[in-house]
Image 1: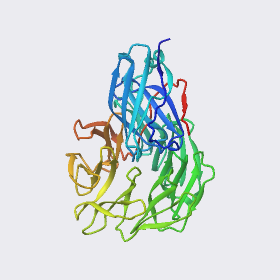
Image 2: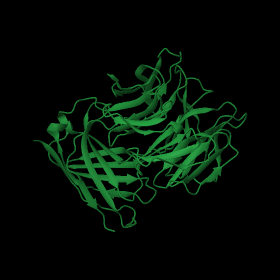
Image 3: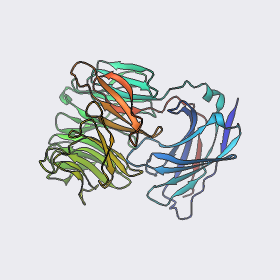
Length: 449
């Protein structure tokens, strides 16, 4: 059996505070990347360290040493901080490799870590089926679907749903959705098997805003009774924990910071602790705030407004609502979807006044530009895949019952626009899985305290 063995140690500069990270777990796997090549993927799990998604910007292979520079991209969070080491194992001779991983943009001094030890079974890796990563979504036509990232096959996984929200847990390989008509939350395995109802309360008819927070391992949603609910991932302990609200919407959870944020339909943004205490209005006098998005590294809250005659657009503030900044505003600005790409400092959005376009600007609102143009309708559900470094979005169906919707993608600069899946209705909740993976032995490295 062929294996690649990597031998690691952990090195941190003396200026690091010992309490910053108390444990690093390396879980190596071999997976299929978007180009159908087998790669080695390293997942970094930490103890008290904030959960960041990292992207490699530089990779060097020098003999038996692989050096990867990783830059944190807060604003896109996952249950594991993903260190993708895109080394085509077919190009490497079998042997021992030392991986040096340099972590940057953490909000504290940069870290150099040569982390862990593991064996990768090349024979099993080479037997993995190609095209095994998938994009999932819930379609307005009543079906939860997925497609491989080469677009070769669209699969219907679950039928008879009326989705108002859809989220994927790529680690546990579960998918969750809310049914607005039946007032229930359900889940299934990512292949559509083991479907089960988690929450079913008639009083919650019209629930929406489903959020899965990986750091607390809980679900959050809004009921039609002007309440915010939470439960465990198996649906147990489902309780309303924030009540007496006025049309809450656009939930977003900062699990590590212990806060939940939401907009109230007409004029305000509020937040509370995750036990429901400490409710506070952090912004008021707004015009239909929506599209709430957090940049936890920059400690900023972003949102849009759409009902003002002069001040529609994109805004941001500190997490407590102070230092409000208009970013992109005007009578002809009305965002309908927004995505932050914090590193390298860009935000993308689509707008009901900009037919067939995706726009972007710097995070401070400067340098507004059209990225993708000449699309068939108003693009929605902007999503970023860090592995392929591509922007994905949904094009809803334009002609009622006739399914003309699609899912499209492009490079971040707008080049190479292509249709990934078509003949759809109204796709929501675009989510990526991790693909098929082997599970070699873990390497756990405890840092000195």
